[in-house]
Image 1 (tube, protein in one colour):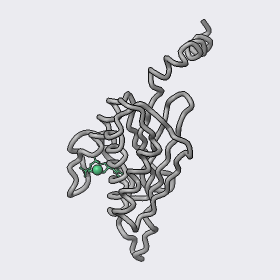
Image 2 (cartoon, rainbow, N blue to C red; image 1 turned 90 degrees about the horizontal axis):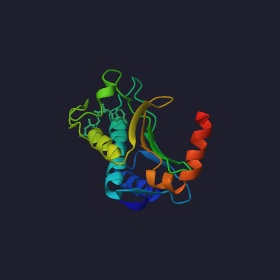
Image 3 (cartoon, protein in one colour; image 1 turned 180 degrees about the vertical axis):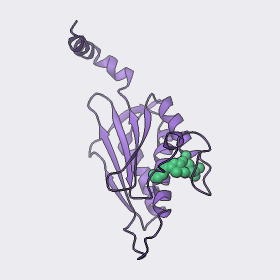
Length: 176
Ligand SMILES: Nc1ncnc2c1ncn2[C@@H]1O[C@H](COP(=O)(O)OP(=O)(O)OP(=O)(O)O)[C@@H](O)[C@H]1O
Ligand SMILES: [Mg+2]
């Protein structure tokens, strides 16, 4: 795996979706500095694209209220970088929200609530994140919609680089 700038990967994925869906407002809350992590850039780009696509689908799948007024679709993409190598890519939308029933199965292959869905999008994202030692987390967005997080944990390589201090801190925490 190569060193990749997660800011650049997120920005590129948003750029493509923004050109495809000009009516949706895409807000990028990305650090102004590079966030470099060892990963497969093509796969992580694919993962971000898949969750952006789901956010778009959730917005386009909203039911119009009786008076016909729907707020503008909005997708916020955040990248939070931890000093010790952890990072989170967060995609929050104001779409129809995650289904109440069967949520824990949404990341399994072929599970879909969309008539034209294959149900493979999140299964692929989950596999990619697991292959990177990370995680995929689905949640409700405050005020409606969903928030989906790609979690990158502190990499062992980076931990090794700061190994002595990390181990020292752990021993203190365990009182040994
Ligand atoms: N942002 C979201 N808001 C609401 N529901 C979501 C969101 N993301 C995923 N889901 C739910 O998870 C299900 C599975 O998503 P997944 O991407 O795996 O498949 P899909 O989008 O249905 O089909 P495909 O990705 O193949 O087009 C969706 O059908 C939807 O019910
Ligand atoms: Mg999908």
